[in-house]
Length: 238
Image (tube, rainbow, N blue to C red):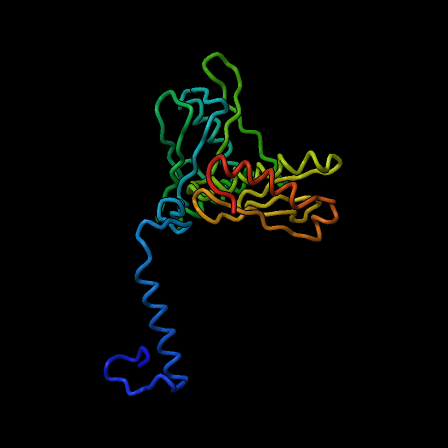
């Protein structure tokens, strides 16, 4: 008797389509509900959590500590240039610190729009940004960086995308490359060359635009071997 249950009248020599459909559905459900709870992938909540779009995070270069009030003055200039007002945000941090948090005012939708408006205003295009500098207590100027909240998956992809640039750039010395952080992609001549695809918390692979790779005369195996060695320092290359 087939897997039709004890009340089924289907005999072994019968091959009715409904029976086969029933078997496949049963097998799928059985596998689905028995996935081991310790199996991890990119849907792990912390690894791929939803970023907080109402905040931006500021870091002083080389972790130099500056006065919050001094930083507030420099930040306000940029905020006003973006079309926002001083009451549209609050600055969070210690009186002397190397990291600050910008919390935008309003409900989630309004605060998210304000954060995006401000962050977008800092971008000049093609990886260039407005000057962002602040002085320390000695009057020495230091660069600072403003970034949106990112989950571990986004940060991981950015690091690997930058690594792909480090590998490929020396192979095409007469070409300029830049990384698009939001997609983890490497660009050349305004075209995608390769993108980093995360396959887990400690694994990744490269997805090529093969026409561009061939145009640049890049050996796929050579690049992927170097990339794979780097990924293996954290996890398994797939």
